[in-house]
Picture 1 (tube, rainbow, N blue to C red):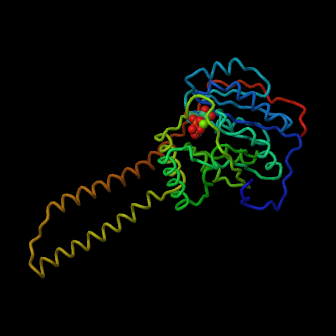
Picture 2: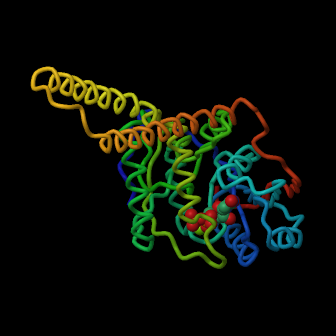
Length: 333
Ligand code: UDP
Ligand code: MG
């Protein structure tokens, strides 16, 4: 089942016998199924650890998510973090990871798309010594052709240009050892493209294929536009290829222009032909102005990222933190 490990386990790692598992659940407008999901998740966690905490991060939901949580709290094993507004899934996950106290941190969506039945295997691999166990989407057939092409192009660009290796089709459904969670907490950047950050920190990782289930209710927050935005953030954070490309294009264009200029001069001097062709000139001018604007735009994108980073605003603001503590229970471990 499991994909080939990236590194061998030459040094077996001892995991704590009486382990605490933290489960981070980002929730944006998930009122329809959140209460049932928390119950099911708690049931799935109980046999896997000594004690657990489920950290629900309400990412500025505009539906009844907050009242659903209020009706459940306080409850041992349940922690509720409410962000001051919608900061996006990447930041919600970061907030959860920063507050998690467990020996391992599991990230899982609130909409049942990530199968709970995979948790035992993830925990087993962690106990075996892997520091990160990530779910790999085995099929994306339900997604539109455009989305699949976009995803393909994104991974292609990353593989071509970035020094970090981002496993294809691995999402946020994963288990992080305490070491990995602490490593992620050390990364100070505001642009939190999590898939890149998981890959950047490294550690002994292994992929587990899974088929995402249908969303329990409500609808996905990631339309094509938001996905494209996420991909742009990923590119900006992990490769400078778009910047470098323009130097190459600029050099080629300059060379072609120089040769063409030389040809025109020679044509005039040797054959005495008139210099003609203002339409070519106009077309060329427009084409190259366009190219210049695109390149300035790309430089601007990077600059705006730098601007966001130097402002050093907090990554998120917490409106509420209701902590039920970890839930003790007598499990097999
Ligand atoms: N989510 C979030 N903040 C957002 C958008 C989504 O915390 O701004 C959460 C959402 O509640 C869910 C997970 O991220 O638990 C995945 O979102 P969704 O199901 O909308 O995306 P998809 O599964 O289509 O990628
Ligand atoms: Mg989903």
